[in-house]
Length: 127
Image (cartoon, rainbow, N blue to C red; front, side):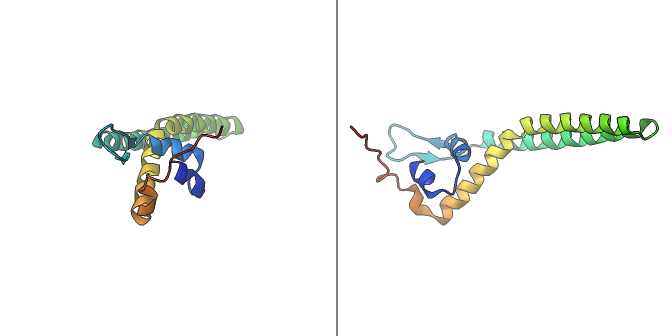
């Protein structure tokens, strides 16, 4: 993770998300990067719920806006409903976002396998 931080390609938040997929086992010499099937399933469910919330928010906002005569207060009420649903969808969609960052890191790791060498990444403590 230190080597990734030094490259500047990944920011701190992305490194924290990537670290969720790194496993260090006592019998293994090097850490393993792995995305499990449960994480993939959770990410896909998260994506579906995100899309469902955003479409429900759009339909409800459209319904509120067009229910009566189109006025500024009706449009403002429709926008506020849509914003509330977008915020809820963003909270639900964090699992999918983490998964996509992990996939991007996996592709980056395939293109640059030298990042996966962990031997020379020891951190020395200064006195």
